[in-house]
Image (tube, rainbow over all chains, first blue to last red; front, side, top):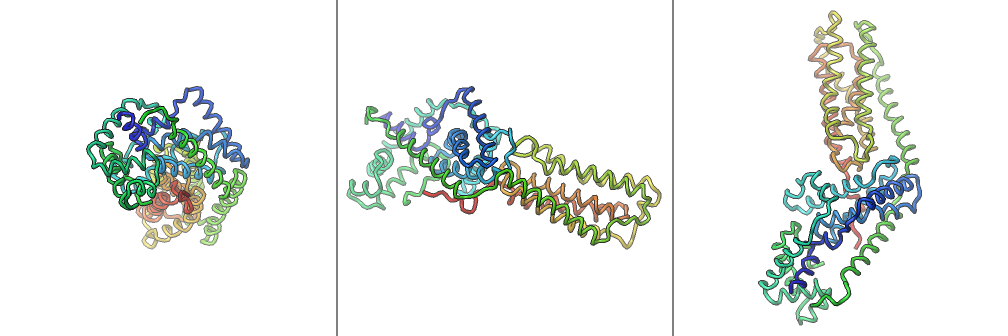
Length: 219
Length: 237
């Protein structure tokens, strides 16, 4: 059960950082920084194929950062896309030799804050200090303890919630069924499955302290 | 619920990463963006206009007007203002050795010191010459105010346009610094045009428009210079 709860906790994003975090040695950081700068320089000069290299050098780390911040894979994906497109739009302004990664992180952070504001979440997020965020972006957090704690919380919450909610949630989030498939399996309507899963999702997010509102289940 | 199964979530994550990568690259290919050479050319053309337009406005307004000022005062005032304006422009318009622009403290110092230094230079230098700071009842400063705004508005808007969507850190402050740079440039021309150094006149006709331009730059900059989602930047799912 603990493993199962841990899996849910990860899936929910409480320890998404662990799932996507890449522990990068300092030599690799140096190498990826140089690769990013060199690729960006080629891209600024007009080598269209260099954008793929820019993406490969920048995206993994920015993505990990965004996942840690947003704790939601879809939001992180969206913000990563916007970040890379911003870099693409402003490639002409890139000055040779200047570091690309801080630029990318700053854009990502700005877009993330805008996203939080757009979603009208509490001001606590948007007021986070830049330095703190940047340090967190470069840090290698020890997620093991957090994962265990999250798993324990998820387990307790799953046991506490009504059975129909738990089952709907597990079918959707753990087994990966579609709403239609889950509805058929449970012998109920799609809307009922969505509602049950939404309630379960909200309850788990609440105990995990995830700041973003749960995604609309109806999508 | 055992862990003996292959890590399906990892496989899904890898697939999602690949799809995301392909999507971003495909979108970037669909959306043209200027290369450095194209951007530099664009920047040079616009910058030429941003210099030319105020000069034309200045000439149309009558150009240099010596008035009762000694020529030495005129030259010294304009020269000092020009040196200050160049420094202000270098700090305010240049980005330094970072893609994120100048440090916040430097921009803040530029914004705060520009009006003080320009006003101080003009007032102190004029005070050294007799009768140069006397009141001109018929020149409260409204014409200088208008001329300052006219001279600086095109450069300010042009600078804001050139920096649009580029500052993820402090767009308001960058906008204010651009306002100060545009205002300082206008100050030099107004210095050549206006012989009045009466302190209230300087405050109303010369300093106030500079402050207005700084405020305008900050206001517009927070919207125009800030990095944000593009109009067509909605995630395709």
